[in-house]
Image 1: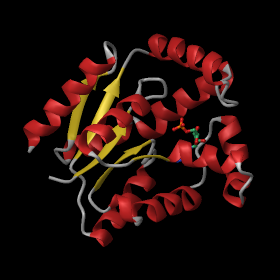
Image 2 (image 1 turned 90 degrees about the vertical axis):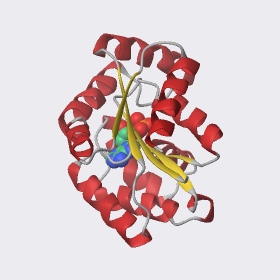
Image 3 (image 1 turned 135 degrees about the horizontal axis):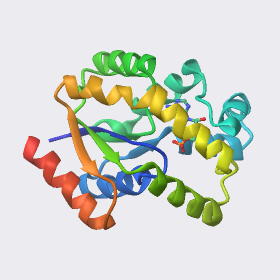
Image 4 (image 1 turned 180 degrees about the vertical axis):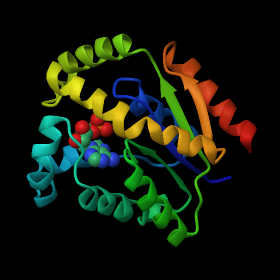
Length: 191
Ligand code: AMP
């Protein structure tokens, strides 16, 4: 069955890593809005230019830019038989926008995978990632800001998806492959 998945959780919980493993397992593309923005920043596109100030501050890029890149991406050929969205939606209005995109495409969500970990574990992982990847938005201030934006804007969305019976909660602390197996067995159990 085609999997159309969201992977949600705070920065540093391992969404990107788990999205890549799910992508391989189900043979579907992992679509990260953060990666799309970073690609555009690096290549100096108009979209990158418009998004830069928000990303540098750890704030959400305005919906009209963000929703458009997701809509374009979900309309591509390789997204016909499923996908995993990583880092979107991040606000109630993005949930609404995604709902209408999926209505239009006639393809409902299969499930929403929610990963979680304690804030001190997240801060530690983010600091390590900052050393390794050198992302401009991985300074302590911006990391803290992003975690705050997550608690305020994004975390409440989990209740929305739980109410729809779509939420699959998995502990984000532990062995990477064991976490992946736990996600897959949960998803496969849903059928
Ligand atoms: P990420 O790699 O997912 O942490 O995203 C890096 C940055 O890109 C975020 O801090 C935001 O500034 C921006 N961004 C990524 N996804 C979204 C989204 N769904 N809505 C708004 N801004 C986003």
